[in-house]
Length: 148
Image 1 (spheres, rainbow, N blue to C red):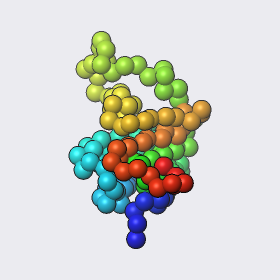
Image 2 (image 1 turned 90 degrees about the vertical axis):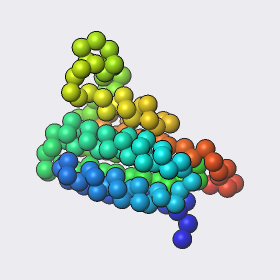
Image 3 (image 1 turned 180 degrees about the vertical axis):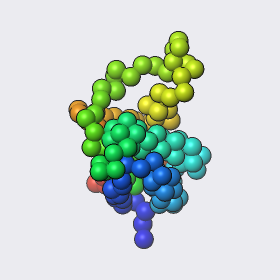
Protein backbone atom coordinates (compact mmCIF):
# COMPACT_ATOMS: atom_id res chain seq x y z
CA UNK A 1 0.00 0.00 0.00
CA UNK A 2 1.31 3.47 -0.88
CA UNK A 3 2.31 5.85 1.90
CA UNK A 4 1.43 8.91 -0.16
CA UNK A 5 -1.90 10.67 0.05
CA UNK A 6 -2.65 9.18 3.48
CA UNK A 7 -4.35 11.13 6.24
CA UNK A 8 -3.85 10.12 9.86
CA UNK A 9 -6.07 11.51 12.64
CA UNK A 10 -5.92 11.15 16.40
CA UNK A 11 -7.88 12.82 19.19
CA UNK A 12 -6.07 12.60 22.51
CA UNK A 13 -6.74 13.76 26.07
CA UNK A 14 -4.82 16.71 27.46
CA UNK A 15 -2.19 14.53 29.08
CA UNK A 16 1.53 15.00 28.41
CA UNK A 17 2.03 11.23 28.68
CA UNK A 18 0.14 10.86 25.36
CA UNK A 19 2.64 12.97 23.38
CA UNK A 20 5.45 10.44 22.91
CA UNK A 21 3.11 7.73 21.60
CA UNK A 22 1.56 10.03 19.01
CA UNK A 23 4.95 11.33 17.83
CA UNK A 24 6.27 7.75 17.57
CA UNK A 25 3.18 6.68 15.61
CA UNK A 26 3.59 9.57 13.16
CA UNK A 27 7.29 8.84 12.65
CA UNK A 28 6.55 5.15 12.13
CA UNK A 29 4.03 6.02 9.42
CA UNK A 30 6.54 8.42 7.88
CA UNK A 31 9.33 5.85 7.80
CA UNK A 32 8.62 5.06 4.13
CA UNK A 33 8.38 8.71 3.14
CA UNK A 34 11.22 10.07 0.98
CA UNK A 35 12.24 12.59 3.62
CA UNK A 36 15.77 12.82 4.91
CA UNK A 37 15.78 10.41 7.90
CA UNK A 38 17.62 13.00 9.98
CA UNK A 39 14.93 15.58 9.30
CA UNK A 40 12.30 13.09 10.41
CA UNK A 41 14.15 12.01 13.56
CA UNK A 42 15.07 15.52 14.64
CA UNK A 43 13.07 18.22 12.89
CA UNK A 44 9.67 16.55 12.69
CA UNK A 45 10.01 14.82 16.08
CA UNK A 46 10.96 18.00 17.92
CA UNK A 47 8.50 20.25 16.06
CA UNK A 48 5.54 17.93 16.55
CA UNK A 49 6.46 17.27 20.19
CA UNK A 50 6.59 21.01 20.87
CA UNK A 51 3.26 21.63 19.11
CA UNK A 52 1.59 18.87 21.13
CA UNK A 53 3.13 20.03 24.41
CA UNK A 54 1.95 23.59 23.76
CA UNK A 55 -1.57 22.34 22.96
CA UNK A 56 -1.80 20.15 26.07
CA UNK A 57 -0.09 22.46 28.57
CA UNK A 58 -0.70 25.99 27.34
CA UNK A 59 -3.76 25.64 25.12
CA UNK A 60 -5.84 23.22 27.17
CA UNK A 61 -4.15 23.90 30.52
CA UNK A 62 -3.83 20.12 31.08
CA UNK A 63 -7.63 20.02 31.52
CA UNK A 64 -8.55 16.33 31.23
CA UNK A 65 -11.97 17.26 29.85
CA UNK A 66 -10.36 18.94 26.83
CA UNK A 67 -8.94 17.15 23.80
CA UNK A 68 -6.18 17.75 21.26
CA UNK A 69 -6.76 16.82 17.62
CA UNK A 70 -3.76 15.74 15.55
CA UNK A 71 -4.10 15.49 11.76
CA UNK A 72 -1.19 14.36 9.61
CA UNK A 73 -1.19 14.28 5.83
CA UNK A 74 1.55 12.29 4.11
CA UNK A 75 1.64 14.06 0.78
CA UNK A 76 3.64 13.67 -2.39
CA UNK A 77 5.82 16.66 -1.57
CA UNK A 78 5.95 16.54 2.19
CA UNK A 79 4.34 15.96 5.54
CA UNK A 80 1.73 18.33 6.96
CA UNK A 81 0.73 18.07 10.60
CA UNK A 82 -2.03 20.13 12.23
CA UNK A 83 -2.41 20.23 16.02
CA UNK A 84 -5.58 21.83 17.39
CA UNK A 85 -6.49 22.36 21.04
CA UNK A 86 -9.73 23.49 22.67
CA UNK A 87 -8.16 26.51 24.36
CA UNK A 88 -8.76 30.20 23.78
CA UNK A 89 -5.77 30.53 21.46
CA UNK A 90 -3.02 33.12 21.37
CA UNK A 91 -1.26 35.55 19.03
CA UNK A 92 2.02 33.91 17.93
CA UNK A 93 3.39 37.32 16.93
CA UNK A 94 3.24 38.37 20.61
CA UNK A 95 5.57 35.59 21.78
CA UNK A 96 8.92 37.10 22.79
CA UNK A 97 12.14 35.97 21.17
CA UNK A 98 13.74 33.41 23.54
CA UNK A 99 17.23 34.25 22.27
CA UNK A 100 17.16 37.81 23.60
CA UNK A 101 18.02 39.28 27.00
CA UNK A 102 16.78 37.60 30.15
CA UNK A 103 14.69 35.14 28.10
CA UNK A 104 17.94 33.48 26.98
CA UNK A 105 18.20 31.69 30.34
CA UNK A 106 14.48 31.08 30.92
CA UNK A 107 13.59 27.40 31.47
CA UNK A 108 10.69 27.54 28.97
CA UNK A 109 9.40 29.53 26.03
CA UNK A 110 11.37 27.97 23.16
CA UNK A 111 8.75 25.72 21.56
CA UNK A 112 7.51 28.12 18.91
CA UNK A 113 11.09 29.21 18.18
CA UNK A 114 12.13 25.57 17.64
CA UNK A 115 9.15 24.81 15.41
CA UNK A 116 9.92 27.81 13.22
CA UNK A 117 13.60 26.87 12.94
CA UNK A 118 13.19 23.14 12.32
CA UNK A 119 10.22 23.01 9.94
CA UNK A 120 9.78 24.42 6.47
CA UNK A 121 6.50 26.18 7.30
CA UNK A 122 4.66 26.98 10.52
CA UNK A 123 1.29 28.73 10.46
CA UNK A 124 -1.58 29.34 12.86
CA UNK A 125 -5.30 29.74 12.41
CA UNK A 126 -6.81 33.14 13.17
CA UNK A 127 -7.87 32.13 16.68
CA UNK A 128 -4.39 30.83 17.51
CA UNK A 129 -5.46 27.42 18.81
CA UNK A 130 -4.33 25.42 15.78
CA UNK A 131 -0.82 25.18 14.35
CA UNK A 132 0.09 23.66 10.98
CA UNK A 133 3.60 22.30 10.49
CA UNK A 134 5.06 21.42 7.09
CA UNK A 135 8.17 19.42 6.29
CA UNK A 136 9.04 19.14 2.60
CA UNK A 137 10.74 16.10 1.11
CA UNK A 138 12.62 18.09 -1.55
CA UNK A 139 13.20 14.86 -3.47
CA UNK A 140 10.16 13.88 -5.53
CA UNK A 141 7.97 15.76 -7.97
CA UNK A 142 4.29 15.20 -7.21
CA UNK A 143 2.22 13.32 -9.76
CA UNK A 144 0.01 15.52 -11.92
CA UNK A 145 -3.12 16.52 -10.02
CA UNK A 146 -1.90 15.17 -6.66
CA UNK A 147 -2.57 17.03 -3.43
CA UNK A 148 0.69 18.25 -1.82
